[in-house]
Length: 245
Image 1 (cartoon, rainbow, N blue to C red):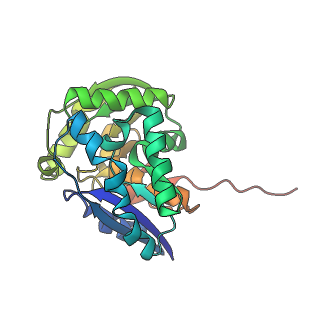
Image 2 (image 1 turned 90 degrees about the vertical axis):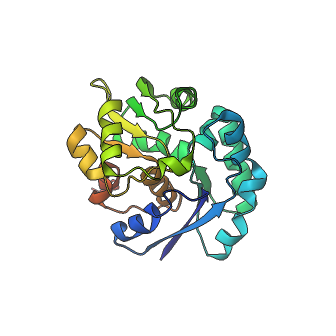
Image 3 (image 1 turned 30 degrees about the vertical axis):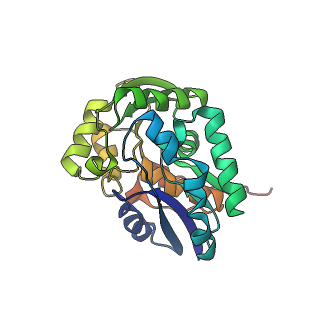
């Protein structure tokens, strides 16, 4: 059994995690602990407070007691808003507090892009344009070329969590770009686990979504590979096997 821990802000699309646990179809357990969201607002000042060390550390003990082997801060906006260096410091603080390998959804996107071999990306965000711009800057710092950014102007995670299949598909269609090698949907408040494969079929390229890459990142930290095509091309990469001559 591989136990993975997630610190998830508030309540919106956390039911993606038990759904993904079933889709992984293996001995993987996904333990979600909710952090205090503070003010529910996709606004830079509110996001900086949401991702503060005190708020994250408060949930660490419960994850440690659950037997988690790794922990991921399951929030994109309240990690990338700190910038490249600040997001690294956030993760270092989390790792020290938990005594476990740690990461965040923002870094999960950067690592997942390398996994699927994509460098040119389109961003289809639920956030306001200025917040989406911070994600674009983070990805550029990670070495990606951002060919387009679409913001949707939604302020609260609660509203994002009400979006269903039709809204998610529309967001993907409108946010895609012909020059992009991958399409990114960066909000963990958005339900996407049930739609990744059909989105890839519709768009014709890898689609990386926040909760999907968050779980993949936790598996990466725990040195686990799970083949789960229902979660998209990110979960169909097999480890390299070296054959001795």
